[in-house]
Image (tube, rainbow, N blue to C red):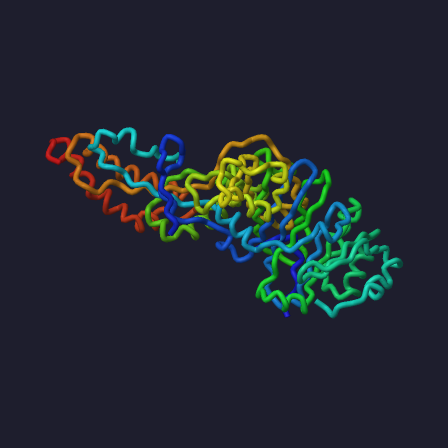
Length: 457
């Protein structure tokens, strides 16, 4: 039987796009791959729809094991009632992930001898236990300083909302009531009790789970009103010694979200990299992320995507529809009427420009993230994406001076791409050149230069 992992992991769980209006889009090109959460063995995902003091959290879990052993304990700022909790659609986080994932794009250089060369060539980018009755569950609670504030069932989950006076009593109550508490929980529960937070505790009702027909646990979504805009992560550190990945999708009517108690850093982006990476994009991104994570001393949140939800360029997935965003927790649509000029089949697809998505990727450990994540909304609506560029050279015959100069410039360009890849990933530069067949190209370039000087090429 696998040990229970206490995680605050909510709701977790070759498209080619052409650009038809180059003057309207900054990143026209072909989308060829994305670096989604499937790259990581254990990547928790959380969707947060937030405006003012209202928050909707969608929590997915990455629990792998017998569902009877599953339980989740989440500190929450207020007592939740049944109508504030629901089972979410597991596809919504998949959609958010696909839409916001870092992406690989490719361009193809045109014939340098065409008149439109200068304008057409893209600029190089900078480098459970048995069920218990209410009476049984409450027994002993008073003496332990634990109060059952609410108890209800939602979908396949049995849920209790607890308050506690001290962490030892809460730990004892949980153990007596069939929850398997990892060693060390007492110390990590203590700060939340001092803050007078409540505890959202869920475990699986096996009979109801079998009735759903699902093989995996569905996400839980909670709604509450509180001035606290935060995400508890410390309970997820109880029984693990390795770094954990957390991807947070924040939906806001204002603009980008950022952390206030840790730095928020943009992931390296807009880099031209060698063509062979097309077949190794997953490994490239994992290596690049780890390199950046290490360079930043392992205590930052990386911004991987920030964009108005009504558009994308290039699109690694279609923007979420109005209905999908509602399922993700966007609650401010209620005051936004559909466009009356749209025909009925399309009204529900209209996405107003007051939904801005921020994707933050946090890799955290006990020593580098001693505090929970505290967020703030900003009015910054600047677009950003993790974007990596393959630029295919023109391989046809160059019959003009501009063409000859273009051919001469390619070895330097290829070497720059190799150096960029080595810097981003810490991969060995010689191995990169070998995969690019760069040495062969550089060895033969000298005579091409001479022929060009003589006008014979």
